[in-house]
Length: 158
Image 1: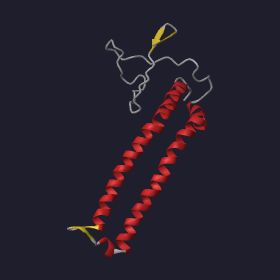
Image 2: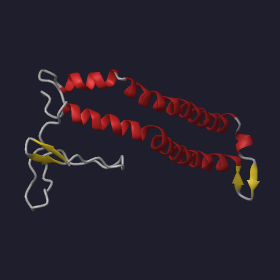
Image 3: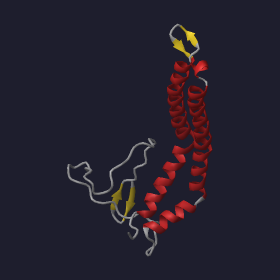
Image 4: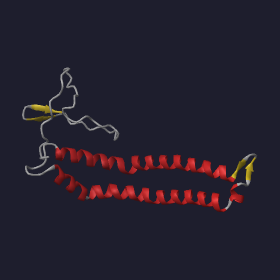
């Protein structure tokens, strides 16, 4: 809690990057059973004359934002290319080499079935890898940017 102009303002920062707090004035309770008043502007926030659009452009040009985007692209671009190549290889093999795809592997299970199930498995593994990468490499930095941006835009001209 911080003291500001005789009022206490709560600064909520949670470690959970998926927590999305309600915007001020959207019905949260202040502990007394009544709706809490909007928080006062943060000291050191935007100077008068700065619009929210100016602040977002400034954040977009920041090194921290570029680093989050770089980390995102370093995972997504190779993963997308690899998955699309794997998918296209399956489609080309299914249409261009039906004899290979019909070759039995075990009983009634053939190469096409194994490759098709491999597509599903790859999708789940890629989803897990993306979530893990985001959690370990980007979420913390993105959340810090979000907090800073919200602090800067609080009280900015719209």
